[in-house]
Image 1 (cartoon, rainbow, N blue to C red):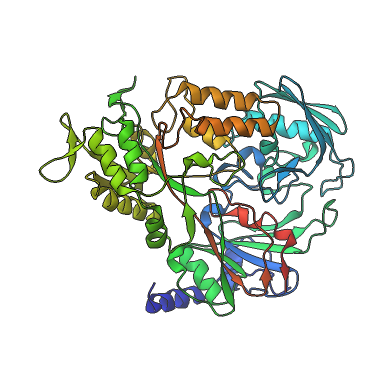
Image 2 (cartoon, one colour):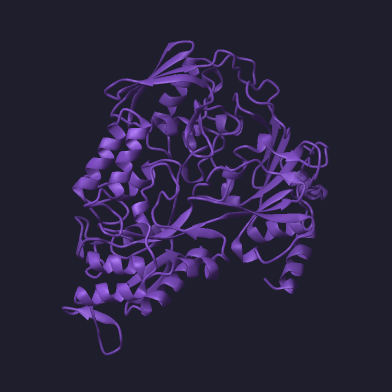
Length: 545
C-alpha cells in the first residue's frame, strides 16, 4: 500500500470518534455506544500493566452473542470460550487436556462416555457448577445448535453432582474434541437473552458489550485455574484498514492484519506470524457431468478424469503462490489436516510440471491448435469460482489460472456470492477455505451422503468411507488417528496423489498481527480457519515485558 494512501487512512481514522477502552487503566464510559460516539472518546492502547486492547475483524463479533448453542466457541472461528469453562481443552500439539473434567472413560462399544468433573467450580453469580449444568448444556446445544452437528449425541445425563454420562446415538471417538469447544452454561440462569448477558465459570466475565464496536472482558476473581495475568481484555471490531490505522496511531496493542500490509513497519510494533491449518484450495468434481434430482448441474467431464486431477496437483507451484500471493507468510498445503495428529504425510507432493504434462499426454489429453489440450471432443478447461468479496482467494484463482495455462489447461475465473457458490461447486471448482481442530473436517469434505456423493463436491470412495466410519467407532483416539490416516492413503487407495485426489490444496495462510514490542503473547497452537478469536485463546497468560 502506498504511503499516501496510508496517511489518508490514518487521518480519516483519527477524525472518527472511536470508542474508549481501558488500556490506560481507566474505566471505559458506560452506555449504548451512540452516546460514547457523540462524546468523541478515543481508543488508548495500554502498552503496560495488566490490560490489553485487541483489534479483530468485524465478522468476529458474535451476532447471536456468547451462547454456545448459537455458535459461540464453534463454527469457522473455533476457540475455547473465554466466559465459559469447557470439559476439555487442546494443548499446542492438539492433544487433549482436562479443564472441568478430571477423568473420562468410554465404554467398549463407544456408546457411553462417562466424565467426572471438578467439585470446586462456581459460576460468577456464586452458584456451584455441577454435572446437571453440564448435562443441561449439552442437551440444550443438541436441540438448538445452529452451527455444530450434535446428531451423534442421544442424551446427556447427570449421574450425580460430579458425574455426567453422554449417551451417544452413534460411536464417536473424537468426542473429546467436541468437549473442548462447548462452554458450560448455568441451568438456573439460562434463558433466551443468555447470549447478551452470559454467566459462566471461565477465565473472564463480560463487563461491557457495545455492539458493532467493542467488548470488554474482566478477569473472573473466583477462577479455579491458573492465575490470570491479563486482568482486562478489550476486543474492538475493525476492518483491516482501520485496524492498521489504529495500530499506527497507538490505539490498540495487537491488531489482526493481512499479508498485503506485511511490508509496512509501525514504530513500537512488530509483526507476529502464527502457523495455521487455515488452508485454501479448490475442489475438482470427480464424476462426469450430469444433473441431480432437482435438475442442478453435477460433475465435470474434464475433472472427472483422475489423471487430470493428479496432473493438476503436481503441476501447481505452491511455493510460488506463497511468495507472490501472501508474501511468504504461510506454508504449502497438501491436505485439509496438515500438521494435525491425524495427518498422513503421503499427501505431500513435489512440484513437477514436466511430469504433469507427461501424465496428461499419457491419458490422451493432447494440445489443440490454440495450445489447449483436448480429448474425445472434450476441452481441457474449467471455470474456477471464488468468493467475490475475498481478494486472497481471487489472487490464488488468478495464479492457478496462469500456472495451469502452462500445462495446456484453460481456466477462467469468476467471483460469485455464497448464495450460489455451494450449488455451483457441484459442477465447477471453487476456491475454498477450511481448517479445524477436529478430524470431522476430513469427514465432512470427503465422506459420502445419502445420495452416494460427498457434500461439497461430487466424489465417492467406499473404502475411504469405511475407514472414516471405523475411526469414529474406534475405542481410543490413537487408534482413530491411524484410521483417519488410512482414509487419506492406505497404500492402495485414498484421497492423496496416488489415489483419487478430488481436492487440490494450495496454501496454509499464516495469521498475522501487529503487536506492541513489549507485549509477550503466549505460545499459540495451530490456528484453525478464521482469523478471529483463536488468538486470544490464552490471553489470560499474556504479559507486558
